[in-house]
Length: 311
Image (cartoon, rainbow, N blue to C red):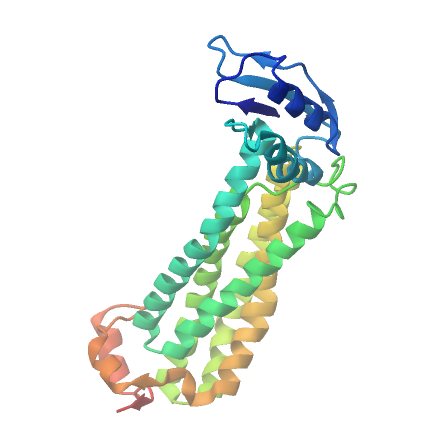
């Protein structure tokens, strides 16, 4: 962790430089402060600050904020100089905060695109919206488990870690991409079977039961394989690899059981024929798409009840 004064300074003996060095030493969480080092051009002064905690400790990130917001501004105010906190912990903190700011936008775009594709495939706004929202539950649950085990330190000892470990900003982003893709695979597989049964019988409750019976064992088996693969990541010593393993395994297990096996069928039974409601203008606007594909599928669906529409 380093601090720099990028504007001209006369040297380490300058009063402003002395004030900064003293303020750094008096800051809570600082174990040691190296001597002020003047650059060759005389424009920058550098301090090596050693925190009392490890680089990955959340308290080190708190120290970076404390230096930037409370320690340095008072001693550099009205001096014509600026102070910056750099180094690996500060850089990692800045990257995590930038990614955290972008994550909601990424999630929003992915949800919108996924909802549109589901609408085209199943011709039901309610089914598309419900699927996109429910897929977030397993991802959110995985984020919660990671927060408890790593930053809060609840799983430090069982996982072989020395203490709390912060979650790098790219971990939630990559996890969301992988988990949402897996969740949508299971969702499309289940909904395809349900819609096929609905088009054949016009009985919503029976269609849900039939679709779940046809796909439940396959979804569970596929999820079990993925959970075993992801749990294998725990054999690595790298905490980040462990994060991916636990997060992905947790989300897949919850998605295949609680979400896909319970919440999706329950909500579809409760909603009844409203699942397949489609406004008349939207029905004319949307192109005909069939997940199972083929002209035979189009001909077959014309001979069975059409989805509920509101002209």
